[in-house]
Length: 171
Image 1 (cartoon, rainbow, N blue to C red):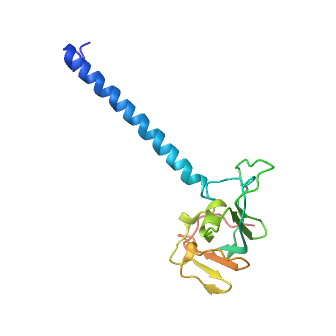
Image 2: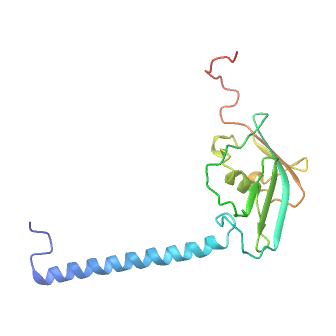
């Protein structure tokens, strides 16, 4: 088969040289970007799963109650495998305690704890949802920063709240 650019020996060399340079540039870009991203993730508690062996300087702990359509939200059971000796940088316990710790002061947000626990925020109507800090509504919604010892209450409304459902009645 006759491939374009491969008939003439001078054109063949130019095409092969161009392809080799393209492959080298592509590999260099992938390696540089992967290295840069891993360095950034290394310094972010959202991506750093275990804090064992790190010099922890900052701790924050609060409580968070989450309600969806007026009912207490029950977190799904995590299918993620976590090693037994792993101390997580962000924890959302079953009793509603949220805890964050890191090597330096970090602006932990309520939304980050919801994200880490698998909360279905995309299914919620953000215009009808609210987050309260010690009983006062926060204007920052899920970007409300967690303060040590504070109590947070998140009230969410699903996008189809109030719409008729077609489920059979429960006996």
